[in-house]
Every structure is written in C-alpha cells, then in structure tokens.
Length: 256
Ligand SMILES: Nc1ncnc2c1ncn2[C@@H]1O[C@H](COP(=O)(O)OP(=O)(O)OP(=O)(O)O)[C@@H](O)[C@H]1O
Image (tube, rainbow, N blue to C red):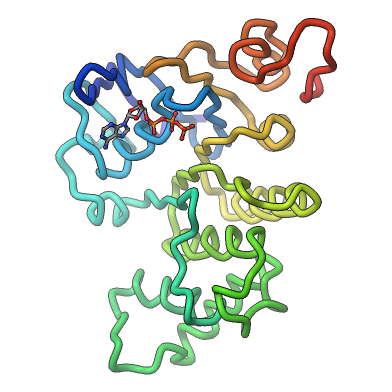
C-alpha cells in the first residue's frame, strides 16, 4: 500500500493553545484511519488543515506527493479530497434525491438555480448513489424530516458524489440513535470500501472504531500520542484511562 496523504510537523496555535504541535502522519491508500482523543485535542483542526479551511503555521501536508498548503478548499476538493461534517450540511427544504442530485451537479460544475435539478443524467446518478447507501426509500423525503442516521448517510453520500479518493469525516455517528448506529456504520464502510475510498474519521464511539478502523491515531494536545491497529490501541491501559474513560477492572469496549 502506498502513502496517499502525508502530514509532516504540522503546527498551528490559537493564541497560547497549540491545536497542532508537530503532527506527523502518513495515511495509506484505501485504509480507514480513526482519530480519537479528548475534546480540544486538535482532531477537527487536523481535518480543517487538510481541507484548506485552516492554514498551518508550519509543516507540510502532501497528497499524492502534491503540497496542499496554500491551496484553497475548492482546489483541494478537485484533487479528490472530500469531507463530511459533524452537523450534516444538507439543503433542508429539498428532498434526499434533490440533495444528491445537487452534489452530482456541483461536481460537474453544472449547478444552476435556473435549470431543473433533476435532469435525467443527474437524477440517474443520484438514484444510483442513494441505492448504494440504502437511501432510496427516503429519496422523496425532505432533508429536514429525516432521522439523524439518514441525515448523516445523505451527507456522506453527497461527499461520495464528488468521487473522492480521500474522505474526511468529522464524527460520522454523532447524534445517531444507538439502535441505528451500527447499521449506519456498516453501510458507509461498505460503500466506501466498494468505491476504494480512503477514509479518515474522527470518532468518539469506540465500538464504531473497533468495528471499521484499520488503524487508530490517538490525539493528545495537538500531538499524536499513539498510533496502531484497533486491537492494540483500544486495549492500551493508558488510552483506556486517558481517552476512553475506562477504569481498571472494567470491560473494554473493543475486541482484541
Ligand atoms: N478557529 C479557532 N479559533 C480559536 N481557537 C480554535 C479554533 N479552532 C480550534 N480552536 C481551539 O483549538 C483546540 C483544538 O480544537 P479542535 O476543535 O481541533 O479539537 P477537537 O479535538 O476536534 O475537539 P472536539 O472533540 O471537542 O471536537 C481547542 O482548544 C479549540 O478551542
């Protein structure tokens, strides 16, 4: 497997807060890399620096060997890096199908408020996308009437419409009802793996991490405190105590 994204000595401080304090990380092609860590550790900051929404004060981020620093978010999307947000960014007054069609149209640079959204080519691709995510039954529902699991999947489907090679997801399961969580996770993992997409995702639910991550990076105060396979990281007593909040003697969440 080759390196897709490589961060070297990334640094960014907000006043006295070091949100990135020398981040070194290689993301391998097609892997699912989970980022875990306490609130304020700098996890979202890393995503924002990769997408061009924040500019590091030092270091470099290379994607397929190309330096991303200094590039605008739109240019980074065009290279094949998409993201989904902790709070899904949907067009709430439109249906799920229309949202998906808008993402397809945006990718084609053909979105226009004056032309029909559901042109046949966009509609067909949007339906295919929804089908892959198991979202066809929700196709005609307005985005503001969806449960959180369906909203999250729709948001991720829109990111996948950009045909990314790398997808960055900020807490893909936050707010999703416990009963729906694993189905959502299994669906998104299946679609992304089928499409050969590399995924980097921030996650607080260790069951989710244990289920789909190939590797886990533990963030601590702007640095990577540990990195390895989930069986190793999630069973590490320090990670359990400092990040997961498990005390000695309790049953860990993750399987070895
Ligand atoms: N635009 C900003 N301006 C000022 N401070 C910021 C900004 N973005 C992040 N920070 C600060 O940087 C630190 C890291 O924030 P970040 O959101 O990356 O943490 P996180 O690990 O994603 O936390 P959480 O799990 O709560 O989402 C925090 O102290 C935060 O308050």
